[in-house]
Image (cartoon, rainbow, N blue to C red; front, side, top):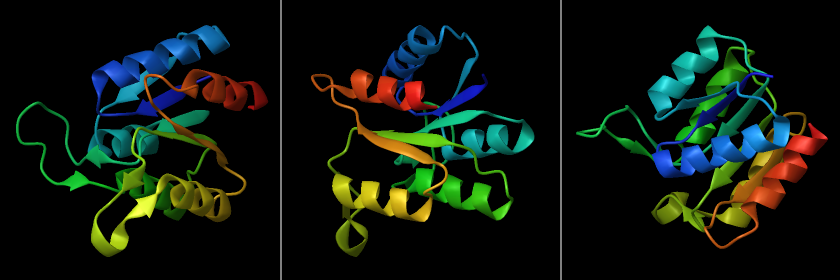
Length: 145
């Protein structure tokens, strides 16, 4: 199974990758660390499953990453839908609220929107917290897939 994780925090992506490897016995998990690299990888290859952060930088790198995309993960899903390459996915985010001002959404609003907008593809929305049960929630998603 080919799985892509789009996550800009390397510690978080390592933990997610390790959890998926342990759950699936697969070593085929790849990581993209920005909106641009994630979209390029998703469009240029065939993937079975996507693990996606919602808030990601536009570009990879330690310096000036360009614009931070608060809903970059949603933009990736919209583009995949547009080019008919949408695949099953789970969203993992550490934020209780995403965005600013009028665009701000709570975790529960985000979850509801994703499940409503992508009922055939969204396998879940998981809150990533060091002390939470995110690994268990991810395992339930992966077992169901």
